[in-house]
Amino acid sequence: MPTYTPINALVFYAAHAGAISGMAISGWIVDPAKADYSQVVGIAAAFAQAFDQAWDNTAPISVFEGEAITAVVASDFRLRGPGPLAYPVYSNPTSWAQAAAACVALILECDAYFASQSLVPPPYPTSGLLQTAYNQSTGIVLPFGAVNPSQVVNVPGVNVPANCKVIATFDGVVRPTTGNEGTYTFGYSIGIGTAYKTIVRTATLAGASPATLPFSYTYEFTPNQISGLNLTISALGILAAETSATDSLTVDYASLLVEVVSL
Image (cartoon, rainbow, N blue to C red; front, top):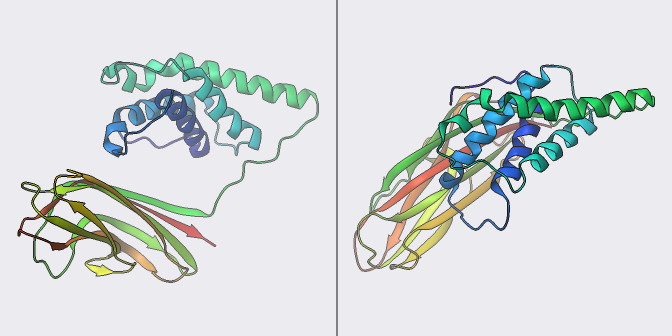
Protein backbone atom coordinates (compact mmCIF):
# COMPACT_ATOMS: atom_id res chain seq x y z
CA MET A 1 0.00 0.00 0.00
CA PRO A 2 1.51 3.41 -0.95
CA THR A 3 2.58 5.82 1.78
CA TYR A 4 -0.33 8.00 2.88
CA THR A 5 -0.14 11.42 4.52
CA PRO A 6 -3.36 11.98 6.51
CA ILE A 7 -5.43 15.11 6.07
CA ASN A 8 -6.16 14.94 9.80
CA ALA A 9 -3.86 12.53 11.65
CA LEU A 10 -6.11 12.14 14.71
CA VAL A 11 -9.08 11.27 12.51
CA PHE A 12 -7.00 8.69 10.62
CA TYR A 13 -5.69 7.08 13.82
CA ALA A 14 -9.13 6.98 15.46
CA ALA A 15 -10.66 5.35 12.37
CA HIS A 16 -7.82 2.84 12.14
CA ALA A 17 -8.25 1.90 15.79
CA GLY A 18 -11.95 1.32 15.26
CA ALA A 19 -11.40 -0.73 12.11
CA ILE A 20 -8.81 -2.93 13.83
CA SER A 21 -11.11 -3.51 16.78
CA GLY A 22 -14.05 -4.43 14.58
CA MET A 23 -12.23 -6.50 11.95
CA ALA A 24 -9.62 -8.38 13.94
CA ILE A 25 -11.20 -8.97 17.35
CA SER A 26 -14.43 -10.90 17.04
CA GLY A 27 -13.43 -13.21 19.91
CA TRP A 28 -10.32 -14.28 21.80
CA ILE A 29 -7.05 -13.65 19.97
CA VAL A 30 -4.19 -15.96 20.93
CA ASP A 31 -1.59 -15.61 18.17
CA PRO A 32 1.49 -13.70 19.50
CA ALA A 33 3.13 -13.34 16.05
CA LYS A 34 2.74 -9.75 14.85
CA ALA A 35 3.32 -10.60 11.21
CA ASP A 36 0.16 -12.73 11.16
CA TYR A 37 -1.91 -9.55 11.58
CA SER A 38 -0.31 -7.65 8.69
CA GLN A 39 -3.18 -8.16 6.25
CA VAL A 40 -5.94 -7.00 8.56
CA VAL A 41 -3.83 -4.02 9.71
CA GLY A 42 -3.35 -3.04 6.06
CA ILE A 43 -7.07 -3.33 5.31
CA ALA A 44 -7.88 -1.21 8.38
CA ALA A 45 -5.43 1.39 7.09
CA ALA A 46 -7.21 1.42 3.72
CA PHE A 47 -10.51 2.09 5.50
CA ALA A 48 -8.91 4.75 7.72
CA GLN A 49 -7.57 6.49 4.62
CA ALA A 50 -11.04 6.51 3.07
CA PHE A 51 -12.49 7.81 6.33
CA ASP A 52 -9.90 10.61 6.57
CA GLN A 53 -10.67 11.65 3.00
CA ALA A 54 -14.42 11.61 3.68
CA TRP A 55 -13.88 13.70 6.83
CA ASP A 56 -11.71 16.12 4.80
CA ASN A 57 -11.14 18.65 7.56
CA THR A 58 -7.85 19.67 9.17
CA ALA A 59 -9.53 21.37 12.14
CA PRO A 60 -8.80 19.84 15.57
CA ILE A 61 -11.44 17.29 16.54
CA SER A 62 -13.42 17.29 19.77
CA VAL A 63 -13.24 14.62 22.45
CA PHE A 64 -16.67 13.40 21.30
CA GLU A 65 -15.56 13.12 17.68
CA GLY A 66 -12.41 11.19 18.59
CA GLU A 67 -14.31 8.68 20.72
CA ALA A 68 -17.22 8.47 18.27
CA ILE A 69 -15.01 7.76 15.27
CA THR A 70 -13.44 4.73 16.94
CA ALA A 71 -16.74 3.47 18.37
CA VAL A 72 -18.80 3.89 15.19
CA VAL A 73 -16.20 2.26 12.95
CA ALA A 74 -15.63 -0.63 15.38
CA SER A 75 -19.37 -1.29 15.61
CA ASP A 76 -19.76 -1.13 11.84
CA PHE A 77 -17.23 -3.94 11.34
CA ARG A 78 -17.99 -6.05 14.41
CA LEU A 79 -18.78 -9.69 13.51
CA ARG A 80 -18.69 -8.92 9.78
CA GLY A 81 -15.07 -8.16 8.95
CA PRO A 82 -13.91 -8.59 5.36
CA GLY A 83 -12.65 -11.87 4.01
CA PRO A 84 -10.65 -13.39 2.54
CA LEU A 85 -8.06 -10.86 3.70
CA ALA A 86 -5.89 -11.46 0.64
CA TYR A 87 -8.66 -10.17 -1.70
CA PRO A 88 -6.99 -7.01 -3.13
CA VAL A 89 -10.23 -5.01 -3.28
CA TYR A 90 -10.21 -4.75 0.52
CA SER A 91 -6.77 -3.06 0.50
CA ASN A 92 -7.97 -0.33 -1.87
CA PRO A 93 -9.21 2.79 -0.02
CA THR A 94 -11.68 3.61 -2.81
CA SER A 95 -13.51 0.37 -2.01
CA TRP A 96 -14.40 1.81 1.40
CA ALA A 97 -15.46 5.29 0.23
CA GLN A 98 -19.22 4.80 0.69
CA ALA A 99 -18.96 3.00 4.04
CA ALA A 100 -16.56 5.61 5.36
CA ALA A 101 -18.77 8.47 4.18
CA ALA A 102 -21.75 6.92 5.96
CA CYS A 103 -19.84 6.70 9.26
CA VAL A 104 -18.71 10.32 8.85
CA ALA A 105 -22.29 11.43 8.17
CA LEU A 106 -23.53 9.85 11.39
CA ILE A 107 -20.89 11.59 13.50
CA LEU A 108 -21.36 14.96 11.81
CA GLU A 109 -25.11 14.75 12.42
CA CYS A 110 -24.30 14.28 16.11
CA ASP A 111 -22.16 17.41 15.89
CA ALA A 112 -25.10 19.27 14.39
CA TYR A 113 -27.37 18.12 17.24
CA PHE A 114 -24.89 19.31 19.87
CA ALA A 115 -24.62 22.66 18.12
CA SER A 116 -28.40 23.00 18.09
CA GLN A 117 -28.36 22.49 21.85
CA SER A 118 -25.51 24.99 22.32
CA LEU A 119 -23.28 22.15 23.53
CA VAL A 120 -19.56 22.37 22.75
CA PRO A 121 -17.55 19.18 23.48
CA PRO A 122 -14.02 19.85 24.76
CA PRO A 123 -11.09 19.44 22.35
CA TYR A 124 -9.54 16.01 21.93
CA PRO A 125 -6.48 15.71 24.20
CA THR A 126 -3.16 15.47 22.38
CA SER A 127 0.14 14.16 23.67
CA GLY A 128 3.58 15.66 23.39
CA LEU A 129 4.52 13.10 20.74
CA LEU A 130 7.15 14.72 18.51
CA GLN A 131 8.18 11.81 16.30
CA THR A 132 7.36 8.19 15.60
CA ALA A 133 9.89 6.05 13.72
CA TYR A 134 9.68 2.36 12.86
CA ASN A 135 11.57 -0.38 11.06
CA GLN A 136 11.51 -4.16 10.80
CA SER A 137 13.79 -6.96 9.67
CA THR A 138 13.76 -10.69 8.95
CA GLY A 139 16.25 -13.56 9.07
CA ILE A 140 18.96 -12.00 11.24
CA VAL A 141 21.48 -14.67 12.32
CA LEU A 142 23.04 -14.40 15.79
CA PRO A 143 26.31 -16.36 15.62
CA PHE A 144 27.63 -18.63 18.34
CA GLY A 145 30.52 -17.21 20.32
CA ALA A 146 30.02 -13.55 19.41
CA VAL A 147 31.46 -11.04 21.88
CA ASN A 148 29.43 -8.07 20.66
CA PRO A 149 25.69 -8.02 19.91
CA SER A 150 24.27 -7.97 16.40
CA GLN A 151 22.11 -5.08 15.21
CA VAL A 152 18.79 -6.81 14.61
CA VAL A 153 16.81 -3.70 13.57
CA ASN A 154 18.00 -0.13 13.01
CA VAL A 155 15.76 2.93 13.06
CA PRO A 156 17.62 5.90 11.52
CA GLY A 157 16.76 9.58 11.45
CA VAL A 158 15.57 9.94 15.04
CA ASN A 159 15.72 13.51 16.40
CA VAL A 160 15.73 13.84 20.18
CA PRO A 161 15.76 17.43 21.45
CA ALA A 162 16.93 18.26 24.96
CA ASN A 163 14.53 17.53 27.82
CA CYS A 164 12.66 14.86 25.86
CA LYS A 165 12.27 11.17 26.48
CA VAL A 166 12.36 8.24 24.11
CA ILE A 167 10.12 5.17 24.33
CA ALA A 168 11.44 2.20 22.33
CA THR A 169 9.69 -1.15 21.78
CA PHE A 170 11.65 -4.10 20.35
CA ASP A 171 9.87 -7.37 19.64
CA GLY A 172 9.99 -10.39 17.39
CA VAL A 173 10.44 -14.15 17.22
CA VAL A 174 13.71 -16.09 17.60
CA ARG A 175 14.48 -19.75 16.82
CA PRO A 176 17.44 -22.15 16.51
CA THR A 177 19.03 -21.84 13.07
CA THR A 178 19.67 -25.57 12.66
CA GLY A 179 18.18 -28.31 14.78
CA ASN A 180 17.08 -27.88 18.36
CA GLU A 181 20.13 -29.11 20.26
CA GLY A 182 20.90 -27.90 23.76
CA THR A 183 19.57 -24.89 25.59
CA TYR A 184 20.00 -21.41 24.15
CA THR A 185 20.25 -18.15 26.07
CA PHE A 186 19.15 -15.22 23.93
CA GLY A 187 20.05 -11.71 25.06
CA TYR A 188 18.39 -8.59 23.71
CA SER A 189 18.57 -4.88 24.36
CA ILE A 190 18.21 -1.43 22.79
CA GLY A 191 21.07 0.94 22.09
CA ILE A 192 22.89 3.12 19.59
CA GLY A 193 25.10 1.28 17.11
CA THR A 194 26.26 -1.83 18.99
CA ALA A 195 26.50 0.00 22.32
CA TYR A 196 23.95 -1.03 24.92
CA LYS A 197 21.81 1.79 26.28
CA THR A 198 19.36 -0.36 28.22
CA ILE A 199 19.49 -3.37 30.50
CA VAL A 200 20.16 -6.61 28.65
CA ARG A 201 17.24 -8.98 29.03
CA THR A 202 17.49 -12.71 28.42
CA ALA A 203 15.19 -15.49 27.28
CA THR A 204 15.77 -19.25 27.13
CA LEU A 205 14.96 -21.78 24.42
CA ALA A 206 15.25 -25.29 25.83
CA GLY A 207 15.73 -27.91 23.11
CA ALA A 208 12.74 -28.39 20.86
CA SER A 209 10.32 -26.83 23.33
CA PRO A 210 9.59 -24.18 22.27
CA ALA A 211 10.78 -24.41 18.66
CA THR A 212 10.31 -20.64 18.38
CA LEU A 213 10.15 -17.98 21.05
CA PRO A 214 8.37 -14.60 20.84
CA PHE A 215 9.92 -11.75 22.80
CA SER A 216 9.08 -8.13 23.55
CA TYR A 217 10.91 -5.33 25.35
CA THR A 218 9.74 -1.75 25.93
CA TYR A 219 12.16 0.71 27.48
CA GLU A 220 11.46 4.33 28.40
CA PHE A 221 14.63 6.40 28.34
CA THR A 222 14.76 9.13 30.96
CA PRO A 223 14.90 12.75 29.73
CA ASN A 224 18.33 13.56 28.28
CA GLN A 225 19.50 9.93 28.59
CA ILE A 226 19.92 10.13 24.83
CA SER A 227 19.72 13.29 22.74
CA GLY A 228 20.85 14.59 19.39
CA LEU A 229 19.84 14.85 15.75
CA ASN A 230 19.65 12.13 13.12
CA LEU A 231 20.34 9.35 15.61
CA THR A 232 20.11 5.66 14.74
CA ILE A 233 18.43 3.65 17.48
CA SER A 234 19.31 -0.05 17.36
CA ALA A 235 17.60 -3.20 18.59
CA LEU A 236 20.39 -5.57 19.62
CA GLY A 237 20.53 -9.35 19.98
CA ILE A 238 23.18 -11.85 20.98
CA LEU A 239 23.45 -15.60 21.49
CA ALA A 240 24.75 -15.36 25.04
CA ALA A 241 25.21 -19.10 25.64
CA GLU A 242 24.34 -22.56 24.36
CA THR A 243 24.80 -25.97 25.91
CA SER A 244 25.81 -29.13 24.03
CA ALA A 245 26.47 -27.50 20.65
CA THR A 246 27.76 -24.45 18.78
CA ASP A 247 24.76 -23.59 16.60
CA SER A 248 23.52 -20.10 15.83
CA LEU A 249 20.15 -18.49 16.51
CA THR A 250 17.97 -16.73 13.95
CA VAL A 251 15.62 -13.83 14.60
CA ASP A 252 12.88 -14.79 12.16
CA TYR A 253 11.40 -11.32 12.21
CA ALA A 254 11.62 -8.32 14.50
CA SER A 255 10.52 -4.72 14.73
CA LEU A 256 11.57 -1.58 16.54
CA LEU A 257 9.19 1.29 17.28
CA VAL A 258 10.69 4.56 18.56
CA GLU A 259 8.61 7.42 19.97
CA VAL A 260 10.05 10.81 20.95
CA VAL A 261 7.96 12.61 23.53
CA SER A 262 8.30 16.14 24.88
CA LEU A 263 7.85 16.75 28.59
